[in-house]
Image (cartoon, rainbow, N blue to C red; front, side):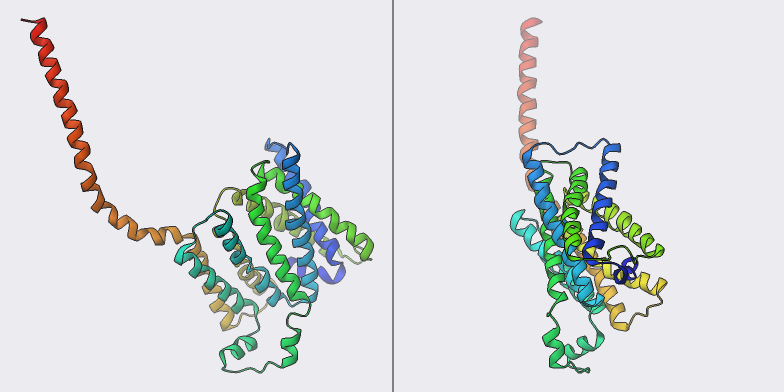
Length: 329
């Protein structure tokens, strides 16, 4: 987010979204070839990759880029980073993924944390009834344009995270990620060619460096690692790490742009870190009571095994004695 902040005024949103996908997809495919990863085979593999590309590539990056132009960075960050809730619900419904009390508590704290980070302090104080005046006109304009696009981007990302499980049944996750970025980026550049103008004429040299950073680190490496782990690990735990996006944005904004964090934002950072711990350690926290009950069950299960083994040994010893008396009178 910090790298792209200065690029948006000098380019167009859909062209920028395509830059984040197409070159990164080519880079992932090159790495996949060097690693010896197999390429997709069969119409089922390409069908799932195309669906994955349209939802997680075209729709997510398109809604995100258009939303960034029409909304504030804080409110947009809150809405886009609330997608772990949708991932948790979809994972519970489709894969019966266990969330539990600690997982839901962590998700709630995470949404609260990113809300404290991204929303204006005046709006939060107004909700708490302590101070701050919010006019009716602001409330009417709250979801007038960009916020809905950011919400659609969050839902597209959530569905794309779940789709990777179906994609990897027919294709390698690394190769599929690269192809889905290429296929998903082509419609963005196609629409940009018809709807937008002056896509790259005003981009400065520093802007190309920022685009290169966003393409390599923000797309190629981030997408490749994210969907590689999402193909086999816990989707709820993995998607909860996106709660850290506004945390890193604040820290790097403070470091490079001299942005100052308010006390509410520091509280939001702490709640977000706690939420990540609770979500990723929910099984261990829930399993503490079960491990205490294990010693009580083992004594009742062991004696029958010992008794049966003892009986088998006794019967075997009797046969040996009888044979000895017959062979050696």
